[in-house]
Amino acid sequence: MFRALLLLLSVVASTSYAAEKPNVLFIAVDDLNHWIGHLKRNDQTTTPNLDRLASWGVSFERAYCAAPACNPSRAALMSGMRPSTTGVYNNPHDYRPHIKSELTLNSYYRANGYRVTGAGKIYHGRFERPEDWDEYFKKKDVQDIGAFSKSNYNGVTWSVLKGDDDVVTDYFTVNYCIDELQRKSRDKPFFLACGIYRPHMPWSVPKKYFDMHPLADIRLPPYREDDLEDIPPAGVRTAKPQGDHKKIREGNAWKEAVQAYLASVTYADTQLGRLLDAFETSGQKENTIVVLWGDHGWHLGEKHHWRKFALWEEATRAPLMWVVPGMTPKGMISSRTVDFMSIYPTLCELTGLEKPEHLDGVSITPLLKNPTADWDRPALTTQGINQHAVRTERWRYIRYKDGSEELYDHDTDPYEWTNLASKKQHAALKHQLAAWMPETEKPEVARSK
Picture: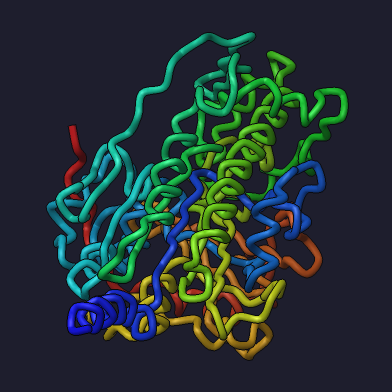
């Protein structure tokens, strides 16, 4: 009888944390722009599982990165500090000497009693601190069984792979996360980070994903030949029209590149589907917050530009989805403008943790409760020191370090074809938007060799 009572008390103790602290399933998808079914930016995309996750909670159609490059975006999101605060502006900037371990999101949850584990790409691959996790899955080398074809245009690369899903590392990243979700014994709430690498280049996925997007059906994104004529030289230098775009057009490979990106998005979506299936059967769904984010957007020829590394809409806009049991309404899309600096403080508020003083962002919990609530805070994106974009629901204002500007009215110009910055009637608006840019900026940190 006494042993039975002890057993009962131990079971209660091992599960009582669930009533006090919700779990966190933290999902990142690399280089995923807003070509997602439910966001209706591009109807060629096939993303049933991203759409499924969105149907469980709130998705933001105007969500923006802190920086349009992998390393500074992730360093900002995971530390809660903008590039202007840390000096980490670009991919070669090693954040680790400049962002203390205890300030990062994963370390903060670990210090507050969570089992913190992860797999795949959460931080930029060159700059990892595995010691800050209870466990981090070591990247698995996949078997190379070859490709039907390979393409390379100025470094924009893709391959039609032989084999099935397990010829791409993401398959094993998700396997690890599935195992974590299905753990039988828990004495702590969990913070589980799953970093899916596709659709990051190379866009190399099995042939069946290319077949889902037949080349004959591919349509190019909206595009104007004269798009760069009204933007300042700093913007033209960003686009590099004589680089990637020229090579892809000379090779008559624009549609092939779009097909490869779409195929990689669908591959990533399929891996997400495996994770969501396991989550639904894990018994943890009713006490787990889910947040999914992309680290930045991606251009596929819009404004004569490829990749990220720009302050325009396509490079800065990425998915953001939240599922909070008992809070988020199902299947709602918020049109409010947010940026990813909101993720750290929002998670703290939702899980009852004190928000650290170093955070630059604010919680968006009011929008999770009511996606149409009033919200007057714009999104801010930084690309290098003293170069920023401010995005409201209607406007995008860009100011480069030489003082040159771009201004776009998204009510009438959703693809940013007409730069209004020189119009005198917008002087007061530009001044108002510029007030959201940092007053002081930390110099760039040393570049990693």
